[in-house]
Length: 453
Image 1 (cartoon, rainbow, N blue to C red):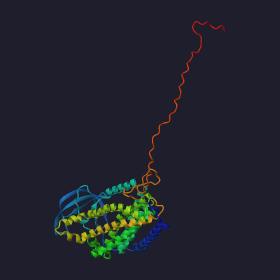
Image 2: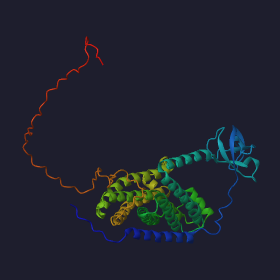
Image 3: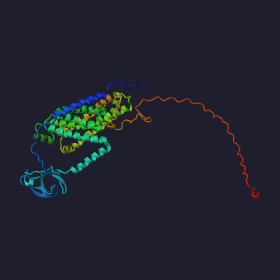
Image 4: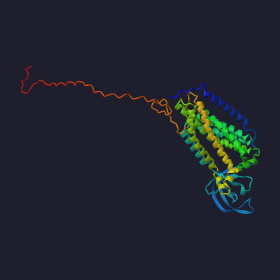
């Protein structure tokens, strides 16, 4: 039999609760200190007038004036019926390579310049995508609610609040030249608190998952700072960053790059940490006698499977987002080494590898925290928030017919010694009685005289 594990009397749930309360207070202080105040920097005049419309007719082979080319040039003219019922016209010139091929019936968005000449007053801005996007959002909500039910409602609430933190705090604070890395860490901590506690409830397992997420996020941020400094990444690789360097000169573009790495890694970290804590909790409930080392070893086996699939998912996600960039460079004749070390590609490589390293580190770190705390907790709650990916048995200790493969093997009792068969005891056969004859009942017969009375 396995010896009984002596556990210290300290309540581990209290300690993890105190630690998360301290981190939560520091997050609130960071939100107050870094909250965006004052006016945002002036980014120059931007067109704010847009109108929706539908292309009615298309006239190719028209002649238009192009400010980039001296004299007249060929163009395509489109007649558009805008939302108010008025019919307007705009033209697409050969130098406008950013405009896609438009057809009659397309629902588009036009940018309106009221002070420009009539020929340049309207310009193509984008397609109208509100209807398909609304249907997609509705389908997403229905799927989450149909499968998650009450927990799905809480997950959607956490998602909404997370987006609110990004829109109301992170983006405005970055525009006002706040320290980008600190803004990203404080904003990510606030998002982690909201997402994990709202989706999975406030409990010891959620607190452990949150602690593992925040610790892994801090290591990811530290690694991103070291690599960005060593690789001398300036953050000026994309056209958007180059525009911001002109319109918002005080903005720290390298800090903006680091903030993007930290926020991007958060979405994968909380999934892995919640899964690992759920695995440890399920093992602990299945066999309360398992110690810290046994819990850590068994849960790490599940973590390796999860990491193998999650890293592949993360790498493919970044590669898919950079696919047009890869195709663009594939057309050139640059060596592969020169191509990968260029900042435009190196930024994506750093983003991908730093996030993957943080993901891998989060598995043993969170598993160690969960095994250490839950092995010293007598009553492990079932928060019902994890997904252990089917690597463990769901054993019910109250079911007498359930098989627990984690329990100690019990000795099999020896079979009784065989005995010689005994002859059956002879019992006397019961005596049968002869049936009694049934005599006919006397009565009047034919020919008898009638009675005199």
